[in-house]
Length: 92
Image (tube, rainbow, N blue to C red; front, side):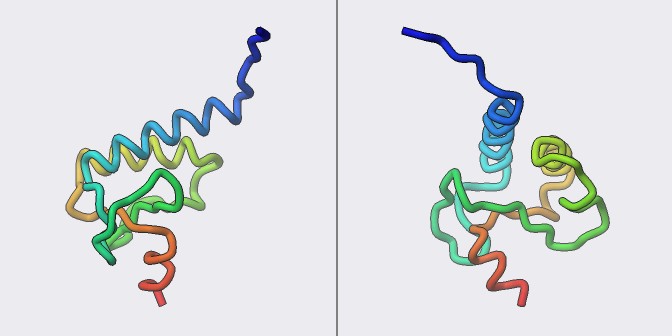
């Protein structure tokens, strides 16, 4: 059986998913908009008000999610979890 080395991108994705799981533990397991359970894919952290950095300010998803985890731990009242679809539908 051959072992393979994971690429940097794969390792970043694994770490990003672990951080998303940590964020879900703090913010809850249900979508803010529809109240249905969240899955691993297709979820976003929704800012109730923007006064900090946003996704486009970061070079990678990992950097953004590390920042978000700090924000969630320090100011979770401004952040909620949502399905990507619900997030898009409720922004319009």
